[in-house]
Image (cartoon, rainbow, N blue to C red):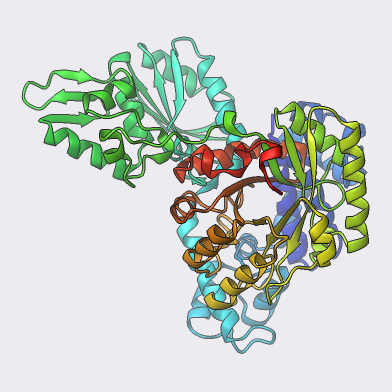
Length: 567
């Protein structure tokens, strides 16, 4: 059955194709429908009737029928007809940061550009700067966007493949002869993006298991199949590499294929220094070749004279030395997390009411939640004006009074303008429990200007958290130029929290920046940025990223009880 992510991808492609034909209104409807499908808590098997689909906000009869066709057939005739009208390479153009449909249409009409390669050649030859509405600065921004696109080609956002990873493990685990399955590689280490998906399977009979693997319904193509390794392409277009090992080597294999490469190189050096040899088949005596360890990762690490190292920090950033000296940090876990910051509701661009979001947080085990809808100047997000914020404060208090088992905190995600000021009246900010201040515009300002905007916002005593501090959008846009050292130093002094925004396309701060913030003495607030109840699970990504940054419970604001927050 076609996944929700695939349905959403098709709807987004339709929107892109319509925009590239300069069609008005319809693209927005398809994007809204795509968001509804991607974020609904219903499974694909529940989206089985026009009645169910049209009951969802933003999905009318026409789009509903198309979704049913996708579910039933795995394809859509309407999409194929649109593809014939627009060169396929033009769809790639609008994936570049700063190249929207209107710009793509202009490029095609005036320069005949219909592909990224053509655009790159024209930009590097200085042919874009003279076009009306572009200029030299935009030309350079397009070159930067192309470079960024090239560097991230072939990688998927980790949060977008979570369901696929789970489904694959369930499929592999159901095969007779499979004793254990673990996802390895970048995914296991909690990286923000992944390339191929790597699985290590424990089996004493890999030949039989392999035959079952290549015949799974989710497999669309078999690239290679053997007793030790199989590579398949699944219906979502992802490559999946499966490696088979017996019990004697299983731990060593899992260690090896989890990586990172630099971590493995460091471990092999430690082994050599001890007269040993380490590879995916085990840890061996350098002279006799006798296997010393290999069944479990802990066994291998122990034989090397160190504690087991959690996958998230296997990046050769000091973890091996810390493990050998017995000083690995006790990293934050889900069990440490008591509260949820930065969620959106139907008051702005969220899908669920305040009460629905609060109940979902309570049922997920959280003690408190801060409702932080968008403030008004961010028009595209249905932001709240000052009088609406006051109304929402009253509503939050009302729900909080009636709802047992969780505390609701009033909040807002305010926008930091070009001078560092916020788009909400100060007296309202002062009345809120949590103020998340974020940059949503002016990404191309200088390093000094961006940094000063953040510092000015932090000088406002009402600001609790700086939201997604670097502004990156994974696979789409790099971070803006900002002096994080200066920001972290000021934040630590003022007691302003830095956000680790857990939304899949952000994961901002990154793990490495969390590590820098920790060294500077900052407190990190993990925010799901949930726009739907289904998004609450993104906290898993945030916690993984926090662990990649070596964050301990004391470094994370969410580990405090509501009475400890000092808001």
